[in-house]
Image (cartoon, rainbow, N blue to C red; front, side, top):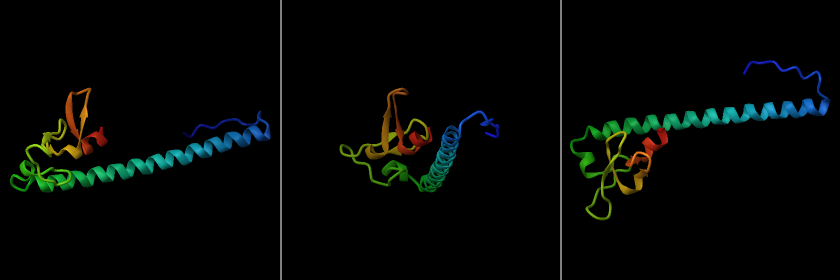
Length: 111
C-alpha cells in the first residue's frame, strides 16, 4: 500500500487493465475488512451474552451456553468446549481433530 508504480511504459489498454485490477483489489480489501468487523462484533456480543448467562447459578450445568437448549442424557448431551470451557450442546459444537477436543461454534469462529 502506498507504493507508486510507473505505468508510463505500458500501452493504454495494459494500463487500464492494471487500474481495473487495483480497483478490484481495493473493493475486495474493503469487503474483507467489513466482514471481519462484523465477525468481531458478533463474537463480542456472544461473549457478553455468555458472561451474563454464566453468572446465573448453575445455568450452564442444565443448558447450552450458546443456544440455551436444555441438556438431556441421550439426545442432547453436554460437552465442554476446549477453549472457553463452557458446556455446549451437540448442535453448537464441532470436534477438532487436531486438538482431539470439542469446540463451541463461537470459539471455532474466533480461531
